[in-house]
Image (cartoon, rainbow, N blue to C red; front, side, top):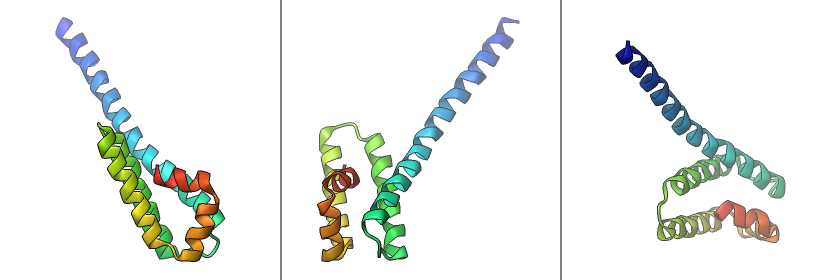
Length: 109
């Protein structure tokens, strides 16, 4: 009887842990979608292929930052994001984005 109760408790414990890990991945997609929607509001003429690429980049950012264990790793991600965003957007689009400093910082960090 004790073994059955232990197995049931163990099963529910594992289920809870697996759901918690799935939620973090979902959060990365949700956060990236919110950020890309805010970016599209600032930059009206964003090409759909660039929008898709930036969305994937933002998902990568959130997943990597969730796994980062040191400040150096986080700073490396910030530098990567800054370089890729600055390189992807046209000078005019980048100017519009940088005029919204809160959004620009949010996209990078």
